[in-house]
Image (cartoon, rainbow, N blue to C red; front, side, top):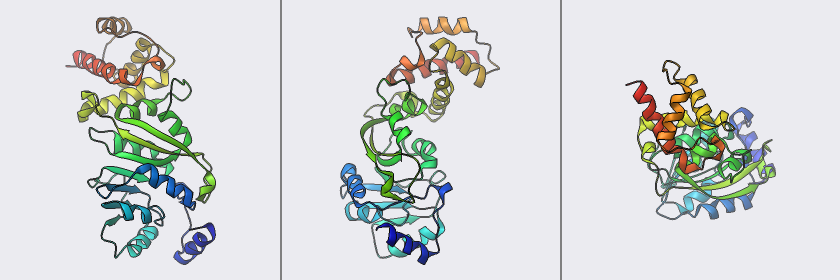
Length: 286
C-alpha cells in the first residue's frame, strides 16, 4: 500500500496517526520482503506481532506461519483488522496492551512495534529462560547498543541485558522513507536469537529481577572500576546495609574478580558478578 492509498484509507476510517503512540505505517514493499526473508518463517511457527496497524506485515505472516497473534491497541485499527481477517483461520487479532498482556504460546516475534516502548518490550518478550526468536524494526541507536562490539560509546545497560539472554544475529539499516508518517528517528531491522545457555541466575524470577536492577544500577558508572560502581549501587539501592568500600574490595579479591572498569567486562562476566553481589547482600541482610 503506497502513501496515497494509505491516506485514503485513513480518511475512510476517520483515523489520524498518533505520534505519541509511534504509529508509523510500512509502505515499502522491499522492507516487508526483507523482514519476511530475515525471519525465515515456517508452517510450524507461532508468531507474535506487536502493533499490527493495517496489516501490511500481517498479510505476509499469515501466508507462512502456523498461527499469528496480532496485537493492536488502537480501537479503530483493531476493528479494521478484525473485519479484514474475519475469514482467516490462522490469525487472532488481540486488542490489549502487550506490556500488560499474558502472552500466548509463540516461538517467534516479528514486528514493527511502537518505538516508544522498545525497552520494556524487549524485557517482556526476551528476558526470561525460554525466549523466542525476534525480528524487529527498532530505533537505530538501540540496535547499535545491542550489536555493540568493544565500543565504549554504545556499551550500555541494554547492551548487557539483551546479550545476557539473546544472540545478536543480523542488523540492517532501514530508510525512514519506508514509513508514513515518516519517523524522525533512524531505524534498523534486527534479528536476535535465544542463547543456547543462559546463566542459572537469570532463570529464577527474584534473581533475574535483581540482575536487571544491578545492571541498571552500575551502568551509569561504566567508566569507574567495579569497587566504586558497586559501592554506588549499594548506597543507592541498599542504603540500610553497612557494606564498606574496603569490604567490597576484599570480597571481589576473594572471589577472584578483577577490579577493572565496568565497561571492560564482557557480557558473560556480568551474570556471575551479579550472583556474587546478590550473595554479598544476602550475607549482610540475612
